Amino acid sequence: MRAKITYAVTAAVLLVYFVLVGSRGVMLIGTGTALTVTFGVSVLILPVIGLWFLWKNTQFVRKANQLAAELDAEGGLPVDELKRTPAGRIDRDSADEVFARRKAETEDAPDDWRSWFRLAIAYRDARDTARARKAMQRAIALHEGRPVQA
Image (cartoon, rainbow, N blue to C red; front, side):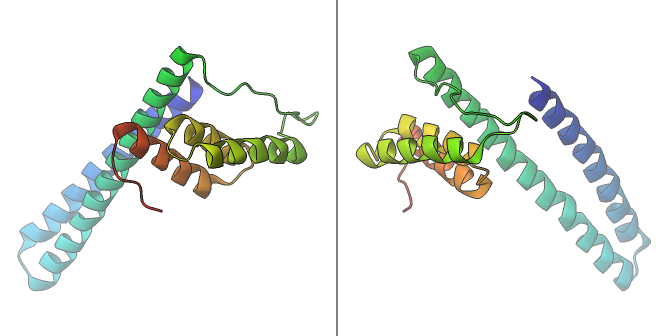
């Protein structure tokens, strides 16, 4: 729940920022000189890119949460079996062991979105965020029946 609140607050702050930056861009365009119009258009590009990025990430999170809810309803969510340090951090050897099992599971069923979802969790636990995101994107694509890029 804390992650959802943090995401919502961050998104709201970004939206306010985009509105402020966009208004400055419009003000620059309104002055009418060639230089300020050029700067104004350039400034307006930033909120557009930011809104696109925020939208894509929000869609990704929403779809990943839908998969998690569906997998939970089936009883297939991975159980947290990781050992932790006294400080509460995930033990690296434990994460590597679980990752090896999840990878083998995915190799045995490469077209099953469930195995890719569990692999994404294992990547995240192993602190490999980029591969975790790619594995989750693949799980989402498989679940939606879209073609998957290799």
